[in-house]
Length: 102
Image 1 (tube, rainbow, N blue to C red):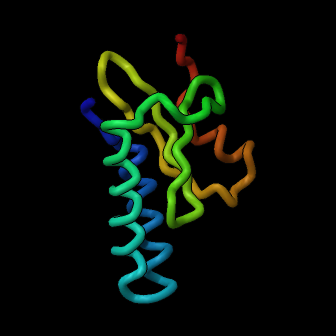
Image 2: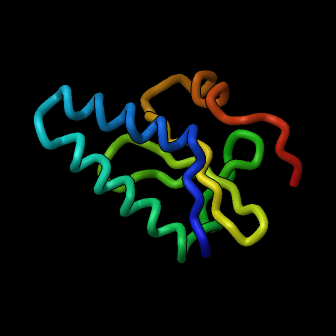
């Protein structure tokens, strides 16, 4: 299945990279490698993850406290956000687009 990382999710990945790179040199690159590996797994496993926040599937990253929020639309996995799980649920919900109808 094709995976499309939307602009909002791409920006989330950049912000995560910057955060971890400030912690120690090279950790940001490791963060991106780990998250892209998780995203690649959606080609096979899309749709098996629990649904949260108004119809978004949530894939938890294997190596970092981040979650990938996606939907399957028209034979395509659309990644809407890659967010830090340590944030408040209300903040996470505010970062996800509204108005999805199944």
